[in-house]
Image (cartoon, rainbow, N blue to C red):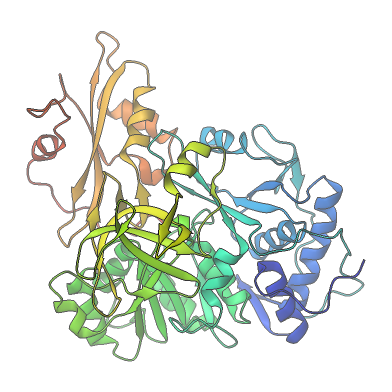
Amino acid sequence: MRRPVTADPRLIHEAVAGRARLHPSAVAVVHRGERLDYAALDATAELYARSLRAAGVGPGATVPVLLPRSARLVAVLLAVLKCGAAYAALDHRWPPERINRITAVLRSPVMAAETGAPGNLPGWTVPEESPAPTGRRRGTTPSAGPPLPAGSSRAATVFFTSGSSGDPKKVLSPHRATTRLFRGAGWADFGPGRVVLQAAPVSWDAFSLELWGPLTTGGTTVIADTDYLLPDTLAELVAAAGVDTVWLTSSLFNLLVDEEDPRRPCFTGLRQVLTGGERLSPDHVARFLARYPEITLINGYGPVENCVFATTHRVTPADCAAPGGIPIGLPVPGTSVHVLAGDQALPPGTVGEICLAGEGLAAGYLGDADATAAAFPTIVLDGAPVRVYRTGDLGLLDPGGVLHFRGRTDLQVKISGHRVEPGEIESAARRLPGVREAAVVAVPAPGGGHDRLAMFYTADAPTAPAPPSVRRALADRLPRYLVPHSVHRRAVLPITATGKLDRGSLLASLGPVPPPIRKAPSR
């Protein structure tokens, strides 16, 4: 059976294949100075897909992929999608225990890795032959493959985020959640000629923005060769590879604004900077806009359950003086925003829970039907049933329909762009020998938001572990962004008059907290 000549642009791999047919020699991926064109990328992905099908990968599977960022990784992800399966890109920096827990719940016959699979799955080792450099691969013909399920609602990827139960949430996202972002996108400039930096961890939804944003629209993605983006690194990528678009967490944006060398300004040459993940610092934004009035700065808001962005706002100098902070904007294509009290819509100007609907919504949490039902209910709005995602964020819509953030309904925080559920860290701590109770608090940052975590615990004598050993044990079980910056042992944890944990008292017990050492935030 031949593949149709016309690609379905709502499917990630078909959108990329369509670009390969239209402009086969256009540069798709740049990494370590090598340039891979669309024809070679798509042909390599077809070869990998044929090998994956032979290994048992097909529609309905969710394939874990453990590879470093590279052109080969991009081809493997496309190959998984061509098989009708979804991919779960795993961060190579995660502890083995975390990787094993995640792969145990994925329905996959194999794990895609460089030298076989660690843990509990058989390995599908990526063939030795790397993707060809610019130019068509000689002697290759796209493999036919079986007919695939139709529809952009089928699963494309699994994203991972902190979960209050003690295990990471596995968010199953469909093709259309990614592709709807770039369908006639007026909120940013994507397409032929745009060169986007890929530096986010592969397990984040921001990875989809940086990779599939350019590749589904005919642009170029430039893969960074480091886990930490410093001013000199960004300046070099802009100069050497022509990068003109970057996405930065708010923390990383602040760092680059603070540490930029005037003799080698790292933002010079960029056309647009996308930022978000935490509240923006008006001071840093004002300084950036004053230095670079020609660069478009876009504030983006959206939980991973809605894939990258739900709303965006083009920031102006006037926004820096807004009493409620810089707005988070208007909905992106295929998304609607509702501010609710329970199931009731609230009028403009009234604070309520931000709830999202539309094509960006995830199918749910893999392996957790109860959490899916709670977070993605169907409610009646304007007389019609609507499936929504309850974000737990508080906000309001102004009379112009622009969304403004006003806080959280729970303890969840953002640290350097990472979503952190204190309960996941507390649960991991309570599983350590000798630890009885644990409480995690987020330490406020000078410019707003939070910049680190502190954990307090009680222990059973005589097996009481010391704080340094507790922190080391957590580092062996949790990804780096969930490991508390400081750990403190207490005889008891304080409670309020109503019998609840007094987190405010724990935070106050830290006293004046010195600013963190200035280094690149974890990405």
